[in-house]
Image (cartoon, rainbow, N blue to C red):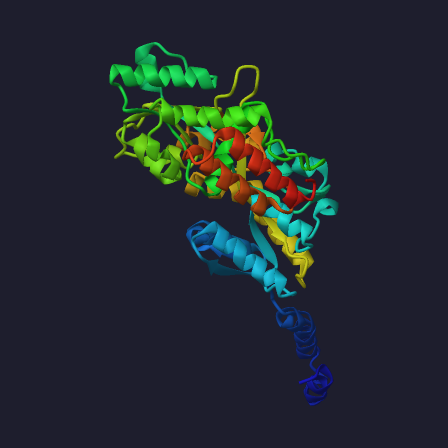
Amino acid sequence: MTFQQFFSKLKPVFQKFRRSRFIALWVAGLVLTLLVVVPAFSQPTVTLSFLIGAPERPTWEPIIKDFEATHPGIRLNFVEGPNATNAVEDLYTSSFLLGSSPYDLVYMDIVWVPKFAAAGWLTDLSDKVADTDLADFLEGDVAGGRYQGGLYRMPVRSDAGMLYYRKDLLDAAGFKPPETFTELMQISQALQKSGAVTWGYVWQGRQYEGAAAMFVEVLAGSGGFWIDPQTKAVGLDRPESVQAVKFLLDTINTGVSPRGVVTYQEEETRRLFQSGTVAFLRNWPYAWPLANAEDSSIRGKIAIKPMVHAVGAESAACQGGWGWGIAKTTRHPKEAWEAVQYLTSIQTQRKVTLSTGYLPSRRSLYNDPEIVRKYNFFPAMLNVIDNAALRPPIAQYAQASDILQRYLSSALTGQMTPERAMQAAANETRRLLGTA
């Protein structure tokens, strides 16, 4: 029914009660109310869709409910993806290649940003965010959202590789935490010789992305580099890179690390360390609450610090983390930006951190009293994260990582010498980048 038809039906009512000012005024008020309320209720709700791996559902469902309660005109449509991160990336990629993605928001791992941005699939957020808006975000997390001068991802979760160690064993033996590769080896061998531990050091050596992340830390800690994103220079065949591989090989050949370390991912190393038979572990922050759980044999016996490095070089922590971007093809950019602002806000990150223990991307939360009471290692995490090292922010990152993983595995399993493996990796990477 149109309002003209509505008024025509009301006309007899007005005529009947024209002598009653009160009733006339009441009817007029009703009409005015309808003029305001009916259009408001008839406005369509905007739905924003996004894809997230299945394990993330418990984290984001309560946040989504909070958002929708305070933004009644916007609904967030959670599309549950597979468990594996690379499978989620493939689904996003496939949807974008179709030309018009069904997703308005993009929940991204840090290493997806260059690929997605270079392909033109993401909205540049630079004109929406001032430097002052980014001041509370961790520098490494912000850098991980940039590509060729643009900002394509607002960070929400941070991550960084670190060194876990058995503080009780080091204290008992009179050792300070190691700063260099050499000190790590010496302390490990001393603790092994005394029978305090079976293994000195465990790390991720399997051929997968985790090995590339681990190697970034050893490489940067050796004074080397993988790929310079500005010049496309490749540093894998430089002496520092070869030394980085040799350090990892030395841990195996001396028995500091088990030979099976070349098959380990994060969980294998975490479980071995948590069994109480290992002195040092390279892993991500997620391992801390697990290692300090009530049923853990090393609860209260461990500490964390930045990764070890070569003499004269500096520690480096591989920067990981997740964030939110906006699809270039969304039909609701204004509402999408409202959602991104909410999902990365300090209030949201605080809720997520308290419920999951994930590292926030906002610096101020690392000293939040309630968070520190629950996770007392958070202030120490800033020392690790402030030494973040990015994996190369290039559009061909996935292919470059595959090259490094293959040749690094060949060196670690004895199929090639470190020199040959790194030379081959460097040459293939240069061909990939067109700089051979």
